[in-house]
Image (cartoon, rainbow, N blue to C red; front, side):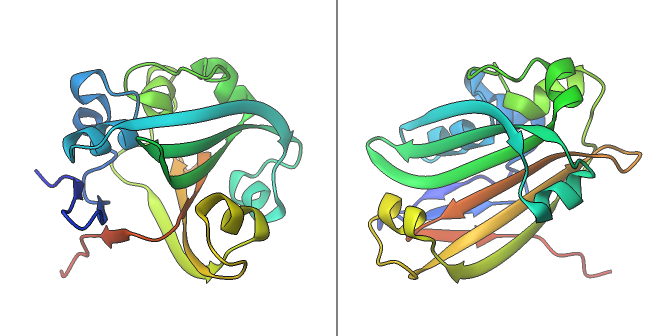
Length: 186
């Protein structure tokens, strides 16, 4: 099965073909895709997580179909002491409450597993939009970049079988990432 790797040059290959599968997210007690993939690659994952309620940015609110308050899980994700990813996840309040994911530790498999258990299964696929864009001042400072230096932004959109978007995650990646996807040919 495909898996994320950390090369001898420190480049992290994020393998979107498998990272969100239950077995990958829950492997050896991992608390989500990030922890599972970094461990498999020989890394030392840790995350600083804050959970709050706020109004989502306009584009996220449109994707969620939510104009009011949403739950935000803001994460600074590290390999050892090196910050390698910023990730904010926006979740409708009713989904977060039902899934019990308004606390920092969401347990084995993370929020996708808790959502599935609460009846918000995201099915067999998710959509990810990848954009290379200038960093904000806050992102540049966090990653040690010059303001405006390019970062990768991945917007992950998870929906139930009936089409309800239950999660929008915005992953911001600094230097040292390679993305791997599978594309249908037929």
